[in-house]
Length: 175
Image (tube, rainbow, N blue to C red; front, side, top):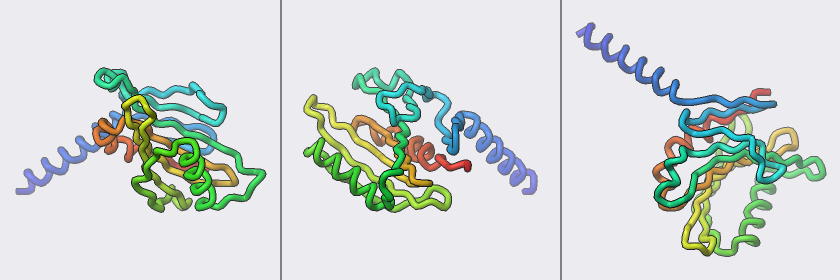
C-alpha cells in the first residue's frame, strides 16, 4: 500500500512540474505574468498605453481568421484620483458610448495579491458577423490603472478561458 501511495504522490508531483514547464513568465518594471508556452509575447503597441500583447498560437485563427490575444494597458491617473470603482465605471461608460451594442455579462470584485481589482466580461457584435467577447481585469496601484484584456471570438471563448483565467490570475505586482 505504501508503494502505491508513494507512486501516486510521485506521479502527481511530476505531472504538476511538467504542467508548469509548459508556461512562460514575463517580468517588467513592477509586474509579472505567466502564460502558456505556445502563446507568443510581443511588445507591439497598437496604442501608446499598451505595454505588451500575448497572442494565441497561429493555428487558432485557422477556422475563424481571428487570433485570440491578451494585452496589458497601463494608464497614469496622476491628474485624477480615481477609485477602482470610479475607474471601472468610467471604462464601462466609454465602452457603452463607443459600442452601443455591447452586452455586459459579469462584473465581479477580485484581488491581485492585496490590491482590490475588478473583473468584467462583456461581448459585442462589431457588424461583420463576428461577435467578440472580452474578459478584463482592472487594478489601480500608485495612481496607475492596469487593465488586462483577453479578446476572443464568442464562439471560441470557452476553448481558451481556462488558460486565460490562469494567465490573468498569475498577474502580480513585484514591487
